[in-house]
Length: 629
Image (cartoon, rainbow, N blue to C red; front, side):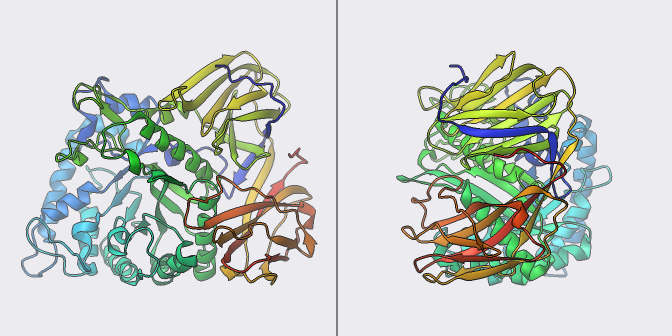
């Protein structure tokens, strides 16, 4: 099927190849942050009876992929560590040092693995829940002893980091997560909003202090939250968990650690975070962090993608791979819009997951890059790629300077990059229906196109199997179709280099308050101060996030400096009707010339209930006048 389309009803996409788009200090596509896999080159899963002879090299270097995360080393060593004979509940420092020395020496002998060190600049080490957790449900090590306190945990972690890394060993990790998903098991699951995170937050403080006694320069974060569902219980979950964590432990954290997942197949419903929900979640965390701590902090997204409940426990499934790929691309597009805030983002794709094979059910681990050739009929044959490799095939060549791009429909996410004679335009469809795209390329040399290679990650006509379709065109491609939930990348080759010489600088300005209750027809005012405009040209978006029960009005009246702005009736992604309640960001264009240094935003709705969670002004300063949609 050709991608070319001449349909009349289409979404407009505009890309200016000459206008560099800078967010904070970042103006380029960082593959080390975003083209990643949840692995380390040390894992045995790379080896074995693979169809590809050198799997590490083929995957990591062939697709230009970066590493990764490990929770097994720090956890496995603690499980088998001796207790200090003079200090009950503490790991033996001598044995930590001895085991670390052996580990470093073993690494030094494996010269063939050292070539991948450059792919671990954002490497994450995380501690698993057990035996690190010292609260209720604490479990002993395999040696039969339990850690005495969070201080004992932190001492072990700090000594481990010093002993097992550096010198002839592996380079030290860039990021350390204090404990993995502590609230998932302890606080009553995804729907609970009454249980308090206080014990977990205090644990992070004490562990962090003890780690820094041993390893003062390590970057520490938490609380590695599985479900940052702030809106649950009309934001009671936020108050009892995430706000409380910032209040108690925020000053001790160098970064926030999150796991972000879509639930595309849970029972008879779809529960997605992609789109407006993830936007509102980021804005709320940043807003309160700024109010409480005076700063925002970077995010380590150490897991993201999709949890595919309906398809788990039934063997490998091609459609399950598709559900993950769709979520992975949709979430990634939101991450790419905040490259200054995201430290690293890892899709939860492990290599083979042999450690997770369920022997009782004869069921392989679901989140795998590789599968056995004869799956799902039998767990036999050589190891081959699952469809998850198609993400890396799709993004294989993307790099360069970010350039200015826009879409007339928030459900069509766009991003674009320019690298000498190469240009890359990424289009992602959040809709559940195909969309027609009308693409306009701007720039003095934009018409000097040698060829366009189009890759679309979509479903086969059977509706079950992911496929990466490719076409090559010898001229511009101004109209095309993107399938339901698909991601499409146009790779342009120009006859001459294009160097972006114009500039778009993006900044976000947060209001003076947050989480304001909605009372029918009562106006809530927000102030946004110290806004700096670089010149006379630009654009702006007012980001108003709402958390409300279904059936409530989602179309507020908004005044900006006393003037009413037109509020769109749509937002990114779906209507959230299958979630517990709506929590999402409305993105409202505001005329650039309305913006002052100090601004007032007034919001009202005609019915009671819920909250305005955040109000954020997103400003795009142009160095030159630029065409907009």
